[in-house]
Length: 304
Ligand code: R5P
Image (tube, rainbow, N blue to C red; front, side):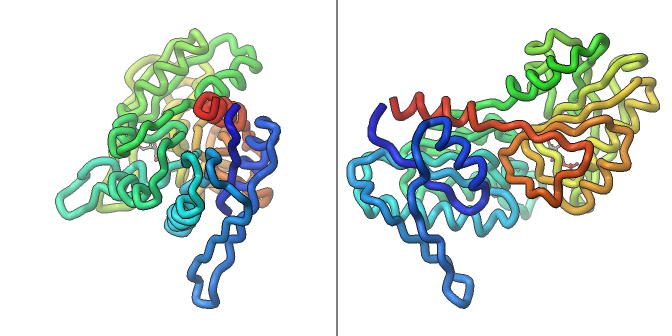
């Protein structure tokens, strides 16, 4: 392997440490201090000349701070004459604003991709982007890796007899199909309607298929408020599903998500650690599985 070093932003240090452990390296030293007014002042403290430098940062809440941290760290690194710089973004916040949903709004995912260009990252590693097409917003190669095999392994351990994979909306069909393929299970799609004038509000209004007597496994890329998952679970139970399991790559868990998911007819909520979930947010139904192995693999491929 080439000489490389991994830095972590402040968003997900436990994941970065786990990745570093799997790669048999220690994390690079960076001082992320702030001035009294909140202005960030990153300071790289290693000799990184001619090294391949990797920076890991999830664009989770507060995403604007984390994005800025990534861009400023990238600039600090670039000025130390490294050989190349790789950005690892386990969760790409703003990904849901991937198109012009209505006139007068930005295409925010593209704006963030352009913003990252300031720091001249040579390559990117992203995990389960909300929309595959976001890869095209970047000017540099993107390794777009999937956490589905890791999530599938959790379901396999359950030895379910009568499982069915559910896409909670039409946009998630490909993801659900891929998971169904990995698990050799059938799949079906639910139809969801979003209200553009009401933030974070959706309504499930049709299940296309039969779930009676089955264990329904809802798979999504993001659980944010939990609205999609909770509504989906209720509809599935009403349609005769014996139990519901929810799984997602990115456990955003915003607003009342924990309360909503706790009260919903859902047995278990399985998420990955693409976003750091502190102890106080780990409710009893929640299981967190690690994507460190897939990130370590993706890094190994690039630094080989
Ligand atoms: C939307 O298209 C996404 O794939 C998720 O379904 C959505 O972001 C989940 O959000 P919430 O948990 O707030 O319903």
